[in-house]
Structures are given as structure tokens and as C-alpha cells.
Image (cartoon, rainbow over all chains, first blue to last red; front, top):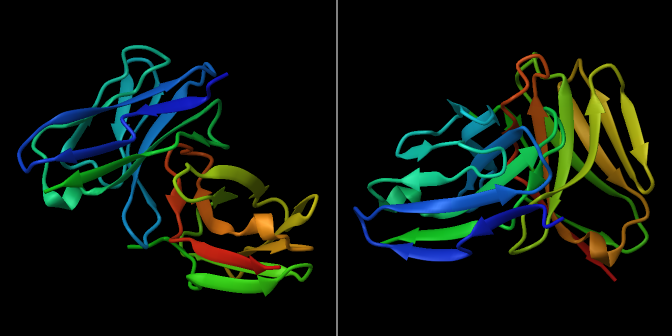
Length: 111
Length: 113
């Protein structure tokens, strides 16, 4: 099992550009999550999904969109990048609503 | 509003001694708590969890204690090893709603050989 994979590992965007952060898991987990971690802060939940076709907002959803067309994939879309979105983004998945398995993260800088 | 707090940003401990990491929460509806460990440039990995029906859970060198009345949990690592040097996050959730986990800001543990 590859577990949870995220691409890209690093990205630099200009203000106003858009991009999609990819996340995939091969553990057949129903639950998937996107978090961001700002320096010196804990992880904040952006969006989550309880299964294909179902998504919901977390604590900090503004400026982001998600989709869940398959069990395996949960991409995160930034439409108009802003400097406040400079962060490390982690995707996670879980079989039930307990232990989450995290990907290695995507470090995004918006200049 | 930070519902889960880790008030010690860093902790240094000698190898072989006990490491105690603390976590406080404000939401009395939280009933499931987890500790994650994170190395640089990697995602967090699950370490140990505890349900609110227990006050202690042990897994090898790691023990988590829960004090519901004080809304406080702690992670004990005995004996501490240099490989334990990492950032430790506590997280909490209400298992009835289930889907939102709230993380603390992390404590960076350094175990000195």
C-alpha cells in the first residue's frame, strides 16, 4: 500500500493564480480530509468528505473547493491564490471516524 | 478560537527519563482524543488514542492520561529515546458528530542523548 499520496510536494504560485492539490489513498477509506498548517500553529480542517459524492466544510473553507468523485481521490482547488494561503497542506484519510492517516504534505507559497 | 491547546511549544528531556506532554481542551462535548507524532517534512502519524470512558490508555512506552473534570490530557513517554524527538500534536473530536478533529499547536520534544 502506498497509503496517502499528495502531489506536488512544493509549489510557488503568484497572487490570483489557481491550482489543484492532488490527494489519493489506496486503503479504501471512506473518510478523507484536507488540513492546512501555518507556522507555529496546529492543523486546521479545510474540507472533509465522508464518501464519494459527499463533501462538507471544516473550520477554514474560504478560498478553497473540493470534489470527491471517487473513493480514492480528494483534490483541493485554490481558485484565486492569496498570500494568506501560504501554508503546508495535509491530506488525510480514515476508515472510521478515528485514526487518520496523513500524506506527506504539500508546501505552498503564494507570492 | 483554539479549542485544543498545548501551552508548551517545546520540551527537552534526557534520554532514559520520562517525557510528559500536556494538552488542554475547552469543549466538554469532546469524547475522543488522539496523539500524533510528526517528523520534519513528513505528515503526522498516529501514536495513541483514548476514549472519554477511560482515564488511561497504555501502548508500550506511551501512556495517555485523561482528566475529564479538568479537561486535560497528557502523554507520558517512558523511557524517552532520541528517536522520540519530534513534534507531538494532540487532537480531539466529538465521536457523535465524528468528522471534525481539532488539533493543538504542537509541542516539539527533544530527547538529549
